[in-house]
Image (spheres, rainbow, N blue to C red):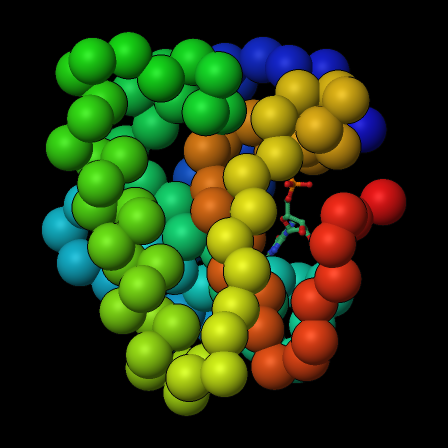
Length: 120
Ligand code: 5GP
C-alpha cells in the first residue's frame, strides 16, 4: 500500500489521456473509467478531474461539497448506464487501514454479482 501524499498519481495521466483507460463517463468535472484490476463484473472508478487537495475523503473541506455531490450523483448515473438495476456497491477506501493505494479521491462502483457484508 502507498504512503499518503499529495503528489500527482496515475489518475492524472488518465485524466490527461497520457495513458489509456476505458472511460465510461466524462464531463467537465468528473471522469469514470473501468478499474484495471476488477473485483466484480462491473468495477468502475469515479474521480474528480481536479484533485484540489482531495487525496482522499479524509481531506474533504467545505469547498469540496459540490464536487463530492457530483461524484456521488455520477455514481448513480453510471450504475444506471451499466444496467445495475439489481443493485451495486459504492466504496471509498481511505488511508493505510482503508487499503487506499492511489491518493486521488475515487469512488469504487462495484456490481454485477452478489456483494457480501461485512467486507473483509
Ligand atoms: P484504492 O486501492 O486506492 O481504493 O483503489 C485504487 C484502484 O485503482 C485499484 O482498484 C486499482 O486496480 C486501480 N488502478 C490502479 N492503477 C490503475 C490504472 O493505471 N488504470 C486503471 N484503470 N485502474 C488503476
